[in-house]
Image 1 (cartoon, rainbow, N blue to C red):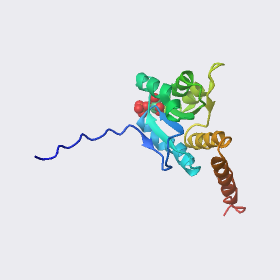
Image 2 (image 1 turned 135 degrees about the vertical axis):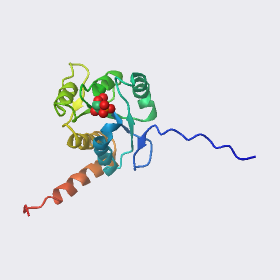
Image 3 (image 1 turned 90 degrees about the horizontal axis):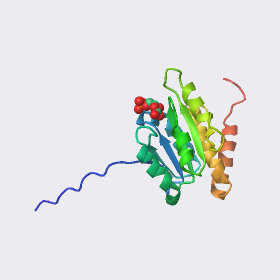
Image 4 (image 1 turned 45 degrees about the vertical axis):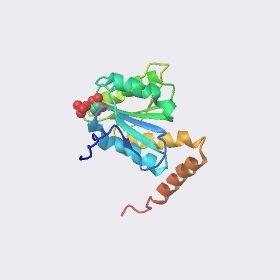
Length: 178
Ligand code: RP5
């Protein structure tokens, strides 16, 4: 009898190059956000921090959002990086569901090129903080680096990597423009 093929496993997340249990969750409202949000993952990989990335929308997949965020700490997640565009409430609603730190990345692409997402992410009413970064790729990269700086306090290996990244960056800046 021919062996029965097991059903293909559905891919539910992208994982870091860095091995180990993910410590940072990178969430985004749409798969279309990934080309920008990948910069957060690259920054974390550069510091040797394991992460996972998922498409979770506060308004299109509210149950997925609730289930993921409320169980994340038990799975080892220590911080969230949330990227969303337009009326971006992903970071704010994530912060409402967890006491873990939430880093918000406003994304461009709307009629007002991310200004809507910036205001929606940064203007949290007092009591539920979201640390908000620049619009787009620079913000995603900095959110990854900032998560590294947060984890560095309790992790000597990450601290060394954060300091090493800065040193390498400084050494790479030429004195002459051409
Ligand atoms: C937000 O709406 C997403 O974060 C995305 O940036 C924006 C548009 O989503 P798509 O229509 O491209 O899926 O929820």
